[in-house]
Image 1 (cartoon, rainbow, N blue to C red):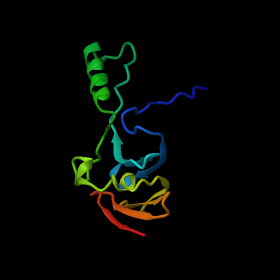
Image 2: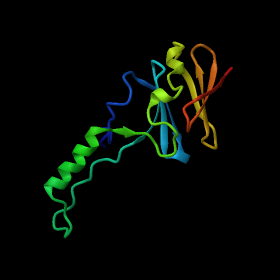
Image 3: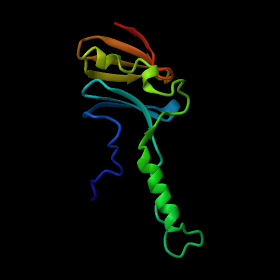
Image 4: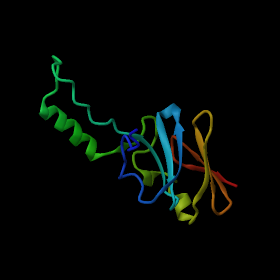
Length: 137
């Protein structure tokens, strides 16, 4: 039984990921690493699999190489439906700036907000689509 990962993303977080949740409405994922870095992302499509021998529409080696090259340029991308282009337009650095880690992460059922309970015993709530901090408790 093969237990190796299907795919490993080396460019997303610089520290170990401590929380990961789906945002099905955006076909996206939210992840937080041990430094408090929050990422909202969707994986880039994996490179195409080589086609079986004898298929009439087999891809050329050049086509396969192009698919692999495009995948290695960016493992992840921003999901469709967010209103920001770069993370610096958001408040997604708030947890890191506070020096807090993530103890718990949850996404609302409608996919509009997410909440983090930090190691500083504060709850922070963000808008998923804007990345803006909506409040702290």
